[in-house]
Figure 1 (cartoon, protein in one colour):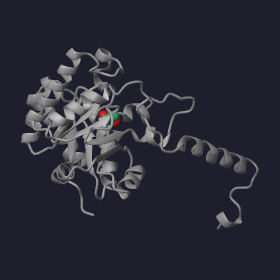
Figure 2 (cartoon, helix red, strand yellow):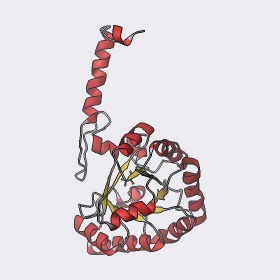
Figure 3 (cartoon, protein in one colour):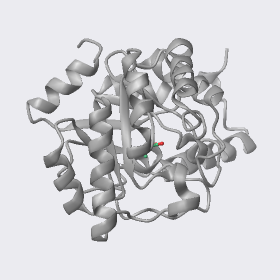
Figure 4 (spheres, protein in one colour):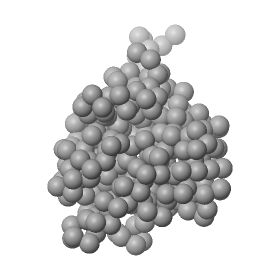
Length: 267
Ligand code: KIV
């Protein structure tokens, strides 16, 4: 299978097939996801939460994104790699946003960038797209705007429903090739998906989006010790956290009892 670029993603969408996207932050996991055919690997700024252990994504820097994105790009044989533009790397003005997007492409080698926001981001998205860098939009629940909106499902009232639809239309008009819909009632996500001619990729936005994305740790059940929170929209396909704890407990026991290494593991 060949490396995927924007036209391949668009072709799959136009055929009516669902797009698959999953976050990845390091070489090994990215390689495993790529090997089973994920369309898009997203180096999400959610790494602030699941890798760095922060409460929000606000502290993540472009340098950190480059560090993780480089590893993912190295692993991606066929998947397209998109990197999030972190908080304050694109909000100041469109010139500095383009420069920051350029860093992610030149230093990490990603195939495109994702940025949060709608109506106010039109000129920034256009500027980046005009430079030849594919942009994925992101509307609805915006983790980088947590201080304004909290971590709440958006678009439940008629007014916010219209605002989010306008945001999505702006992102499309600005030239984005796809858009993440996060934390929306399934009905609204369906309506937005029907109105747009670019693919929507949902997270907590129901089944009628053009594709789905999850944070890899949620899908794999990789949680920090003591964390048993799981949002309603997540489907955990395996409990890797439990497997990791079991394996490391056995390792500790065997080392302490002098059972590891045995002859077969020795030179
Ligand atoms: O940062 C991230 O992982 C994301 C996804 C949740 C869409 O933006």
